[in-house]
Length: 558
Image 1 (tube, rainbow, N blue to C red):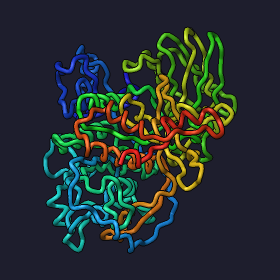
Image 2: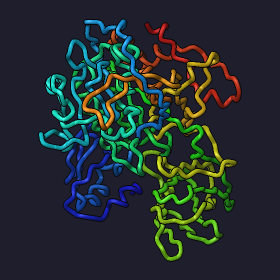
Image 3: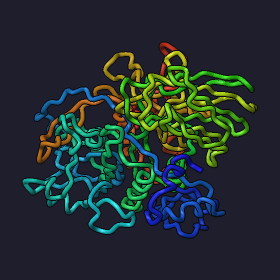
Image 4: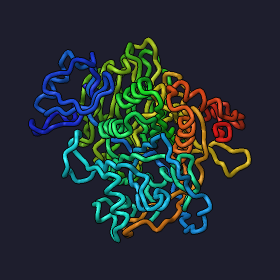
């Protein structure tokens, strides 16, 4: 059973749980399961806790997963906010694009001039997933804000209050929300920010909100809400071509493109013509959160896991290895005390001084990857400076393992630097076969180096990710109202990251589909990648794993 599923197995039997499921056959649904969205054999569903065990064990179910937190891809505020009144020479054209721009993120400032033409909003609809559920929808949570409501609010002195939606509620310091900045890069009409290539596209947005996981306002919703957000955008787009940007993801999982989110993405892209999903590769190249290696039978390998001083946040480490191997872990604290000698494929409590400080979950042949999975979860009560994870090869045919420390924006733990591996550090949900994944380079320097934090491929199963690179350094774009503002002040803000590179590429794909709206994903990818200028390796040959096909060249597209 999925480790997170085990954690939520006990509780109120009548509570309805939101889950992702992979069916054995898309036509057969297990009993006591309510389907919310479906992409062939991948579905989001609701199951009462009392039925969870029976549904999990039913013959119709291939895989059942609990929600997994999905953070916004980490980015860097450059704190260079300034007013810009003199950029009106780049007015939006009167012709509306036939290509919808979809975005899943948080904090969309509909009052910013960059998204208003002739006094009317270019945003067709926002699904605020954390909004008060007052009007029924198929998902059973959040609220919709339609274009009529947006246009009415724009005429009000207090537009946020009128709609009950403040996009900058978590922006305490006025640096601007992630979603508004990302949307401005792609879709600005040029009134304040630089005009985006998707400046005429109608916009459909999913605001996943901020749940302050581990004290970070970058932590968004979860994997179930993400899949349902994709479903919402596609339903609203109807028969129109659509490009969806998702600058989201964490560190963990198997990095083989087999999460249920990634399988849903591939299904969408295979089946729906005129559709592209663009993702940021992540900013984890320097995160010191990944290591890998090979182990022999009866060999022991030490993996030092270092914690921040006085860190009281939960920490998580995952080990993925071949399904024909058997490995165990011993956990030793910084005083040499053995906290756990694990047994293969057993779930065991980790204790320190008789206190429960965590749990070690060990799953055999996870159904989507075929790999074995060790998941170590710490509850924040451990007092050590570091633990040593002693990996033991019990039965080895392959021997390769990959270890990931999950992202924690308040108290990030790391591996000892001398064992860190910087390849295979793409974000946790961007490894599907057909999504278009973007890394970031410094467009302000002559030789256009890849930004040092931009994540590296390949995927663990050896595919190229990211597939291209785009500008991502100190990108000036639309700044949302802060939590203290009643409407946008029409400012710019500057941020850096692959989060900023992805919408640039997404907006260029809009230009491709405006000319040829019926292209399939393979044709879209071919046109896009043929537009790239080659990347010249400057330092290490490993750089090629961060560059993909090279620098996107908008002149070759437009």
